[in-house]
Length: 258
Image (tube, rainbow, N blue to C red; front, side):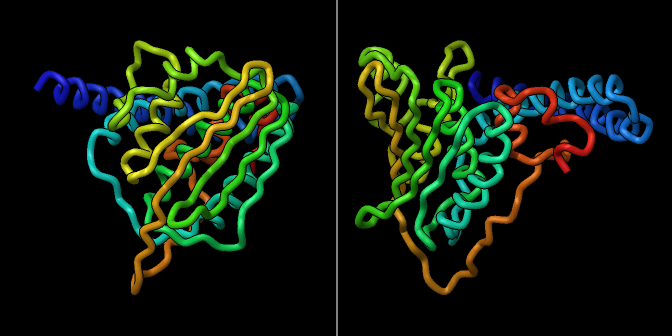
């Protein structure tokens, strides 16, 4: 009961924060009509950046409460989803001096919760971009599984650190806000809810590869869900919100993110 109460309070707090952020977003959009000089645009860019970073925090709070329940799987083209999100992340990360490359097949159908898969990819790519200046996102089929791989050229992880972040055995534990590695914890949980797993391949000093495997569980006779571009309820592209802690303020200037 205590955990359930904490989840309810977290959900209520997140909803209240969203109301305030919506008001801030509306004010920012109104101010854009009179922001003609570089100084005003710079102030608005900083304001929008702060809003996106807060939306990212709120979104993670909401996701933590959702990861304790059921998922909403359906027929999804994981390849199209990966390409679409990858293209948006690639353009944004380029502004942060990070090169993202995406390699995926023409089509790969699966039963999955598309929103959760996008969140997993955002978390893993963001972690890679924070560690190095080159990140590669790959999707391949391996038998009856879809395997996502995110590889960076950062310093890698020490074995004990990798074990602490990716360990846990059995079913992945829910994220703990008192610890770091929240993105990995959420990604582990998302993979586990799909019947898959998340694991690292690392060697200190030679970058990090993180693999997420998902059983395809392809259905038949159901309508394929198209991975349309998703926007946070604050009106910003989900990729911009998910990567906001890595991007320079200039990305958020009026006219830059339209």
